[in-house]
Length: 361
Length: 225
Image 1 (tube, chains in turn cyan, yellow):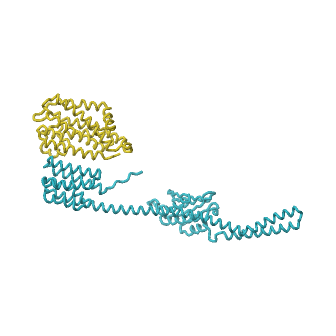
Image 2: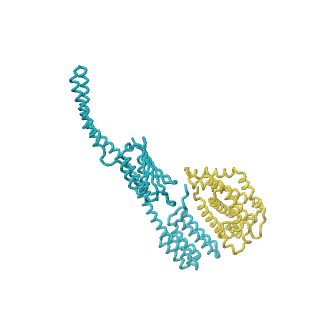
Image 3: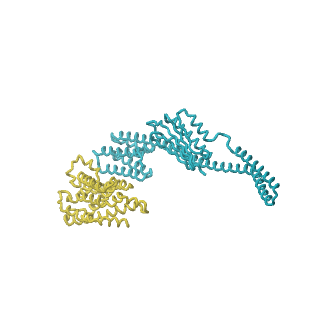
């Protein structure tokens, strides 16, 4: 796992700026350094370290500011130490604090204090605006991330619902077939069954004429049943073209040179899988048009006892093309994985997209 | 209390530490006095405190470097209790060393060293500062040996420039403003103040050493795994 790239943030940078300010102050107070000045310097440093370490409440900084303001009346060099507090006040957008820090600097501060105060104010407000802007960007980014998460949840629900709808429609279709078989064939087959039984009884009683009549009736009933069965099957069969026809038409409609082959019995493929196969192949071929310049596209379908495997290859890989990460492929993968299938991509001399979808029961 | 006793036991388990506490200060007692100041060994003892505090604080540094601190953080022990007990344990050992040194100075120098209680209190503040400095210094490194190697150089420089291993009056006046920013300056400054009877300067030295110690403690106690 790669280490996340460290980035400069205002919260980190403001401590660096405060450090530089303390260094400048140290250099400025050196010629007139006394134990009192150093004690003030260290106490200010201590409070700011405490603030950094424990995120102390703001009143601590206010107390320090008040002490330094009062002491600057007696020791003018203490005004140097007001500039880090001025920077912090500007960074947290506290104009009153900044005002109270600025007054003694203007009234009692030695010459260099003005420059320090100017740098502190400017850097403080720059950091404040940067921080505000960053917070706004982060908020937007969080909102977008939440939206994407919600969409993914919705997509998952839809896929689950799609599976449920498939199961329900399959059950409904079975029930419809059962009803048609019962209504149209049941009576004739029952009558034929009874006639055959009667024929047996008549033969046992050696009543051959009656047995022949009964056999004729049974044959007539069975003939009716076969005719009804044919008629029912014709009614059950979908009237529109089947999925293989649609796929063939899709492949033939492409302007690129195509090689299309089907191996195995396509009638074994359930309607839901056929529809998924058609949609996925449509997406894959559209992607080829968008992102590749092939001289030949090969589409191979293989139907076995348990799975259907579709391999779509094209030789038009562009040298500097980024790896495929679009939402089309992502949705295709999700849809295939929702029916326990798999989608894999191989990028060698040719670009291969391999779909394996189980045929189910 | 358990951590406190454990810290002392852990330090005393190494014979080098016992020798350090008992024998290292002894040669300093035989350094003769300069005119108008305490015997030089009294000031030079600050260097011994610096090295002793660094070596004594080794277990805390190694706990962090070997990842033991992660296990401690996962246990119900508060980090404050762990750190405070260890530092108090090391301070106790340094206190014993200081007391022995003061007894030795009484024997070796007699009345030439006056104000032993203020000197002892100044040593105590200085050793607190040194322990805090060692703690924060060790947080910068992942290996104790590298840390000690570099600290040896730093401590020698701090003592040399800060007036611990060279009398303050020998240092040029022009650099005093700069070296006041070094924590080591305030031990010889305080000792001179005690010798001159300047109690204001003595308390200033105390205050500055303790503020330095607080800053170093705040930096050194930040949890780094």
